[in-house]
Length: 95
Image (cartoon, rainbow, N blue to C red; front, top):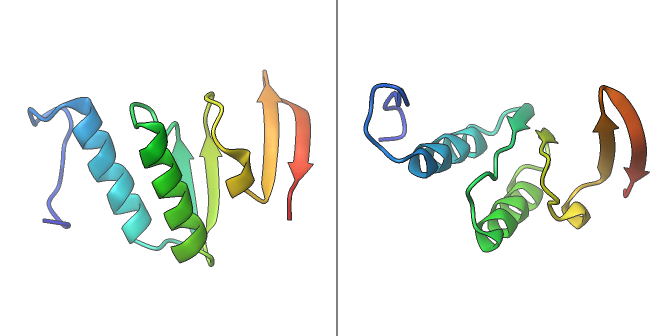
């Protein structure tokens, strides 16, 4: 169930399944602040779009910070900051 503890080192689920479970749990808790590091690794482009649409539709009161090296759809974000070696390369306010 939703409250079952998943310990990735202790179970025999594939990494992509564990990633999907942990991502789903993070989204469903409706936190005020959600920090995600490469949350879309291994997900299809369609799944990424679904998650981003869910965030934009259902998590309006949540500040979402995503650290990712992939080129994800910037139109889903109101601010995009590019970093390299801890320095800001660019900042794009979209709101």
